[in-house]
Length: 125
Image 1 (cartoon, rainbow, N blue to C red):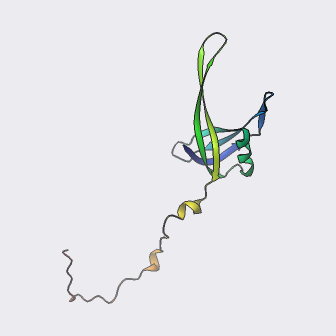
Image 2: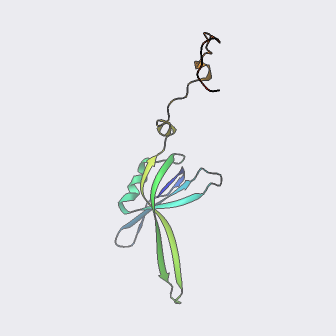
Image 3: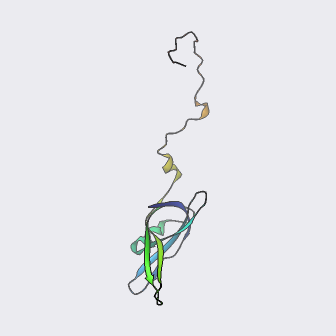
């Protein structure tokens, strides 16, 4: 899956436990009718992918949805979801426009002046 939007916040890398587990969070705001602020976490070596990005950049993030089950000390089962990023790339307007042919300006075409109404026209309308 992919998420596109503008970077709102980039967190610092956090390290947990004795095993050196690393996590870094980024908040991406989607640009749609009802924008969403999505917190996406990058873990372990993927935390370094965020080093070259800044707040305000438009990005496309490849993500995986993760779900976990946890039983608390009282025996109640709880469920948690997370969004985990594994790739991030800059989105540039020029890049999106490369696939579209250029639109000529309105004044690029001049009306034809050499029309002869007596010429045969085989169009049915």
